[in-house]
Length: 189
Image (tube, rainbow, N blue to C red; front, side):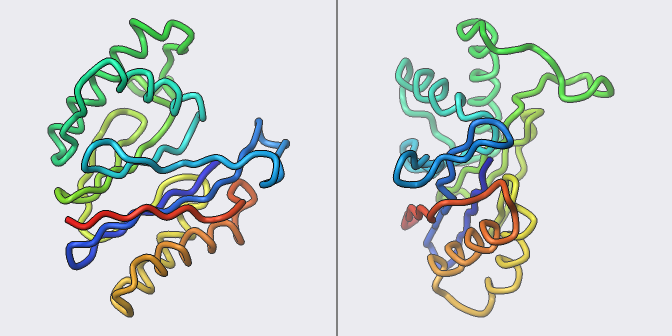
């Protein structure tokens, strides 16, 4: 379980996340035993995912076989994740092919992603829908708490690292599925 936050302001980009490691809904690992990094870099982009942890391994393996993708637009991101979704079913045969509900005609990643770069902030939904955002967003178990903090603080300060840290800490405090410490990565666009 995770919370991941992205903020853009004045040509600066920050992404932050909690570091809780869990196995299912009930087993949490102490930070001194396991600490999960949930945000990383792909070329000129920051990326974080909320959902199954195995996606980190699959995505890293998938990226190791191809050139670094350009993730600076909704179209490029959609194309990248469409290729990723195809690879999930062709090369990672342990992936279960099911939709989240029986009321949708779409496949399901069963995970969401957040991407931030000079082109904007983009969320990738489990059905591969890509949504561009201008200022901030949060995904994951504590996302609703983090978004409240982002909304409240965004226009009050230019210190987006502090805003991102406060947003993740609010999610850690309010949601049992978030925890650990806060990791922060930065870009200058």
